[in-house]
Length: 78
Image (tube, rainbow, N blue to C red; front, top):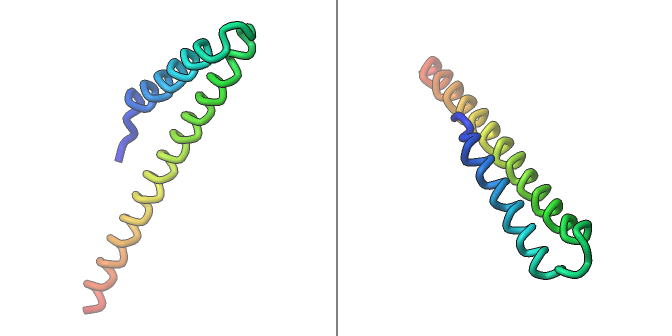
């Protein structure tokens, strides 16, 4: 299974934008550094989700290959 990088990038960017806009609404008088911290946190969270998606897909592919190999071995034994 191939990763859809366009979808992943779009989700990461929109998560960052949403968090940044939320930070502007919540902390308008605290300065730009205070507004950037929640946006960075959300961006890191989105990045974590991307890494988890990649790991899940790789694990699923590995398990599928192992099941396929086991099925071939079972056919050879029969």
